Image 1 (cartoon, one colour):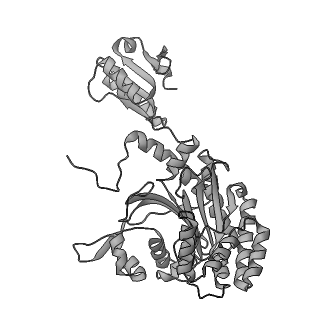
Image 2 (cartoon, helix red, strand yellow):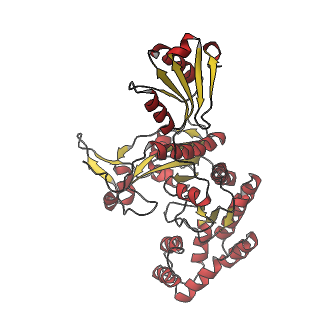
Image 3 (spheres, helix red, strand yellow):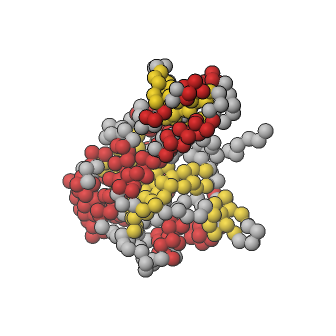
Length: 424
């Protein structure tokens, strides 16, 4: 008997039915917004990650040497692959480029709640425009499918921030600050206590007094206080960032998703490649601690991965935490099988049963029929186990009279219908 690998999961039919409903809802919203589906290899050259991040990142990858002596890895994220795809056909692609895909990724990391070594994610990205309306559109897309899944503004909050505002405020202090390290500290701020947070800011170059002042400045929660923050920073970068963030939030309002969003300068996103607006979605009740989704603008990354300069914004929707949120809110899809019809055979009726099965499937119904030569009772029990809505009994006596018997599995009621009239 073999054990499943740590950090990997099996999905049985009932679980997969609920999972498929969630993924389909996300993807349907992507298509309505004009995002076009892509697919890409699961295996990529490891250099796509090691060239940028160094050989140390290999410890986090499922990397190996293949039979052609190539250093390859199972992809841990999508962005380098998207950059490669865009670079290959950059002159042929109409801008803006709006892509989405749902696929697995792999990272060799510590397994914990909501984090696995194999994980599935839908990525939705817009390439080729730095217009604030593009940032707003990906945020509105996320809000739309969360709403489609049964969540509302009381269930979730999309926290929106801007990396350049954080950077400008940090540079306004007299101390020599490692801005990237300080922003990484901000990203951890809600997961650690204030003393540890201020220690991290101090390690990044701020004095403890400056760390406390910086902490207070990030408490800005409305658009008026953003202007005051830009004045405090006193740079064009800060003013431009505030103007950009305000434009994005206004566009989000125009798209009808404003009620889902809150201004949260303590949202920073830990990855260094973000260049502008960033956002994360959380359980408003606080019971699911990990972010449900996250993303932002990354205008330099495509060029860093070998493409031409290409502004970009997007997000990743994972499928480990989202089901937890749906369960907490009481709107999770039911983990059950769904079958429209079970065609039950009694006696030597296989050709007739096959005929009605084929006709029902041609109409788009989910249909099962006997494949094991089981008794009437065994077939009826199986139909119940697969949650069949209706059983079509194809029996020798009924057929001799030109009829089928239909059994409603919920009520147990039966009716006889002429073969010529079913399926309608």
